[in-house]
Image (cartoon, rainbow over all chains, first blue to last red; front, side, top):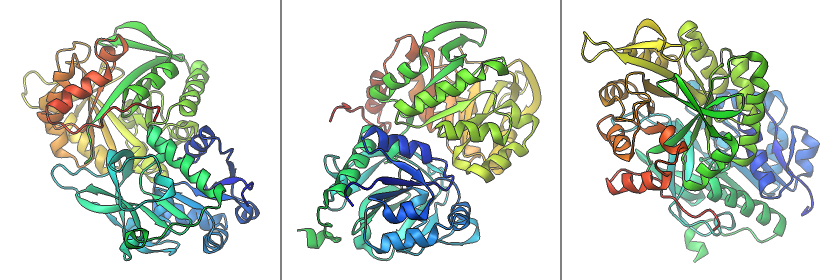
Length: 221
Length: 260
């Protein structure tokens, strides 16, 4: 599996090329594909995404990607979801009056409420605090800045899933991690050197066959 | 904490950076991709390219520039100028732009905002508003098009609210009164618009130094500040601007060495 390619899932997501370019930049030679056979044979999968949850789920279904992606993740292999690629993993999103998502992670995407000083979308560079150690955050200090642009934020019913958290009106888990699955609310491909380092770490980890880190902070101690 | 953004802006004509003083006098300030890489390293939070290429025949140079930038620059950038349809938006977003900015086309066809937001998401639709003070009516500003030449009769505040209600995810607000004069942004207009909408506002037009940016981010209530000349001609480095703003207690993403 170590030599199998990194697949960037092609479902017409707006940041598809940016994600692929960042992976190329860190030497991953990614393959952009919507072919279930490629997903099945992947060494690692990156699911990009921007825009609306409804549109994302529609396109994933239209391209018959739901089953291959669900099976791939269930098999416990390396997976990285980015922005809408994180929301897609949740049970549902409040977007568009409510949208069922893949239901791989127990949680929901909720809308930020605009307040004085709280503009929506949450757009720009914000800090991420790591809640535990993880191979994908290696060499990136806790409290580093990443680029966010989103109007809905993830919530999870199992706090142990949170790898990183960010504050914007509320404190929300901005990185989720479970087994070989990692998902970020921010855009590492637009987060300059820290973002590139995260992709580099993910690719190295996916290829290394290193054991999966413990999910909870308590277990990691 | 979410930080305020410092955004160098490039006016691009046939793949080269130019910047007008009050949109009349143009000077060449270099290669956009090289400048973009430099600004990323210096701590720019985002970039804006405004394409002023007049001829449709020359637009391929813009596409090449956008693709080359996306290959080498890993911070978000917006492309504006000449975007008149959802197809134009799709091309720029697929070439690697994070957002597209629309101005005159949105005024001529406001449904373009709705269509863009529906197809690509509000987060990538920036509506640019160029406005002037109405001298006889303090506290009111009129929207202009075509680089500030043509009055529209639209009230800037009303147009800002309408653009957001149609799906704009961000507003890029330029004062045609202060643009090019390097004496500060129109903070009264920025404050009025920023308070009237729920989306981020980028201040543009009039930056002469970091003190003007601090004013736009505090008195003006802006979420981001855009500037061109003072960066392109080396009057101030982004690092200098950022340390000044941080010293004023404004939340800023610190500039870090990139070789860690």
